[in-house]
Length: 233
Length: 233
DNA sequence: CCAAAAGTGTTAAGGGTACACCCATGC
DNA sequence: GCATGGGTGTACCCTTAACACTTTTGG
Image 1: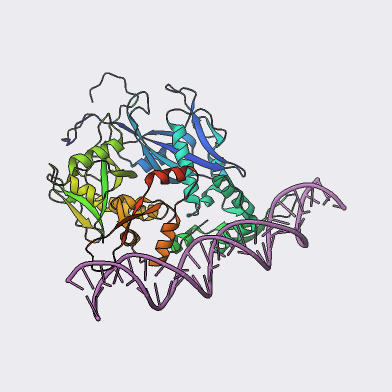
Image 2 (image 1 turned 90 degrees about the vertical axis):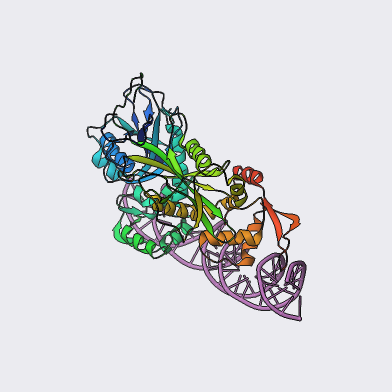
């Protein structure tokens, strides 16, 4: 800590890091992207992508930078989750982690895959490996948050492509909420929001009736939200 | 930073602090407890009670410690709000703040008032003074959180005494949500949860029909929550 | 023509909302 | 007895929940 400025606070300081839970959806399951650690502690164990916060960036900027550095992801939807500060959560030294969660869609990930990044892998929520540090807990908190959020904010669309079918959307909601949803009621409700726009295009090469694609107008949603509109499941 | 241990992270670190938004209720308005700063920067300006996090405590422990040191408050309901990390939020140096919000009732505060604490004062939400740092923003975020939380978790009871009347409870909800609520519907709904227990005792010395006191069984609520019960407004 | 999933309406029940009068108490 | 706020019930509407058959497409 060499600095000329006078500190009003001269105590020892915890290190500050961010860890991000990256959610994805493969059409059937909600998944989390993990990286395999190359160093001790927890060498070879799986962990959330994360790292230390620099002096000239906010924690959110740090989380986004690390997402790109470690997983090659850009322009992702990211939101602060919770700050974990247990004194011994890292065996090396005191590290406080501001955790974020991110929602990415398959396309976004494809584009950036194969870059010069760490070894990463998607894991289904029920097939998570042993995790480093307190990352299992962080993921549990993130899942709870996602469940809560999905029913009153249209976050689900971040996990799908720009064009998606209603059955895809329903499967996603069922995966997040871990419960079956009635098809007709789901369609009625989601269409009644007026935020989904049917496209001409339909699925191709499927051995059954082709589903219509829809798009979600994020801009219109933001407009309506300002005017007091309230999305709900 | 003198330490013998080898650091895996040798960069400069932001200082880590907590700030807490303390909500109270005077029977008519929701209020926030502020302290007047004794030092620069922002000398004599009002600010949230807060301070730096020590190495051997979590941020929550720090927030609770500072609540006691600065406002004499013990055993308060406290919850993490959000972490504010804008690089220039403090003019002295980089300080990241993990913000909390607390709910205290008048009785709790009376008991601890007059201690050897800083100069503190309650301010109604619509009468807030100019605030130091980014504390006005932190309060806005806290109010939003409180509004959201109140409708699906029975947090309101933390702001009232152990015994309270339904009109008091309704006034509190109206103050938090900033909207009028129908008396009959409110009673119906709140009583239908089965979490409120009527007491024999009634109000005294009021120039109208005396209201009955009720109590809220926090223990039973926790039990029910585990069994999947879901409180709602 | 068969399999597989998309798409579509109606009904019954429950919860939410709106609304007006009588009651107890202190002065 | 009057002013003040506490306490109570009902009717309508809208939202939710349950439920089965027809359509399209590829093989």
